[in-house]
Structures are given as C-alpha cells and as structure tokens.
Length: 191
Image 1 (cartoon, rainbow, N blue to C red):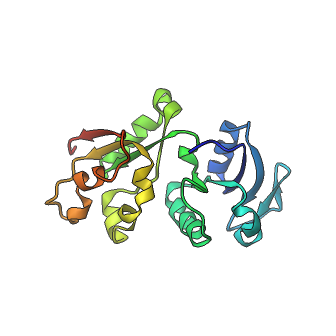
Image 2 (image 1 turned 45 degrees about the vertical axis):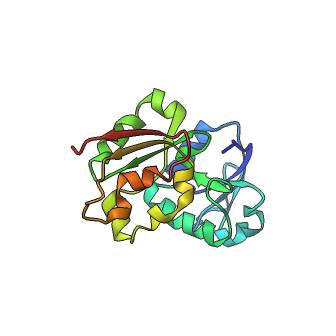
Image 3 (image 1 turned 60 degrees about the vertical axis):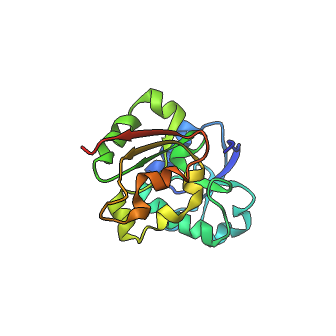
C-alpha cells in the first residue's frame, strides 16, 4: 500500500486527531463522519457519508476510528464499492507494514505491549482483527475476507489447533496458508 499525499479522513474523534498529528505532510481534503456535528475542523470540511459519495473514489480514505467502529465503517465503504487496502485502510496500518494478532483474549496484552514499543510501531501497525470468540459470534465473517490476510506482513498467533471448539476453519494452520508469500509468522503458546 503506497502512501497517498491527498486523503479523506473518516472520523473526527481522538483517533482522527492522533492520525492527523502523526501525518502532518498529508493534505486532508475532507473529514467524513456519520454523526457530523460541525461543518469544519481546522478549516477542512466535515461531510456526512452521503455528502462525500462523489469524492470517495477519487481519494484514499483513512478510517481513523476505534477498532470496534472500524468494522461498521468498513461495511459502509464496501457497500459503496470501495476495496480495503486499495481505496481505504484502518489508520493504524496507513503507511506501515500490516501486523495481525490472532487468538483469544490472551492476545490483548501482547498487542498492547507491542503497541507501546517505538521500534515495533515505527515499522508495523495492527490490523483490527477481533479476538477469536468475537469472530465466532459474528459467524466468522472476518476470516472469510481474503484481503485481510493477503496484506499481512506479520502474523502473530496463538496456536489454534484444528480440533478447537470454534471449528476447523479457525485453526491457525488454515489461516497461515492464506497469508501472502513472505509474511513472517510468530506462534506463541496459550497463556
């Protein structure tokens, strides 16, 4: 994913503010927000999604929202015909190598620890893949999306065996087969 110089930023909260502060060289064409409260932010217009439809395909969209809201916005953008990584991405992976952490609730502390490492975050950003039990609650939809794994540069995972309680499709080895060539894979034991 090459870094674009002109972007649309989806979101106007703390994630958007942090993203903008960390990417001052970008030209932000507009902000997009489902709950638009103001007309502009820092002199840049804030648009509702329907107001932005005519420019969404002209500029790369950085979705600068929390991880759990990302999936709602991702669905909106997919419905509008945009493709993840080609037309938009989660703010945490913009301009970085994509890291995915996969497993149960024990992956959270590992992700948090790596997220505060300057050395790690300089090179990698975490894709907001949910914990395995939340993926299962949503009928495994996230695991069916090939683009997520085709863009992964670093796959950190708890070793989920084929004989797990969620189903064989959740096994680590089945996901590893779908990773792009050259993706680094790191397995860690159940904690």
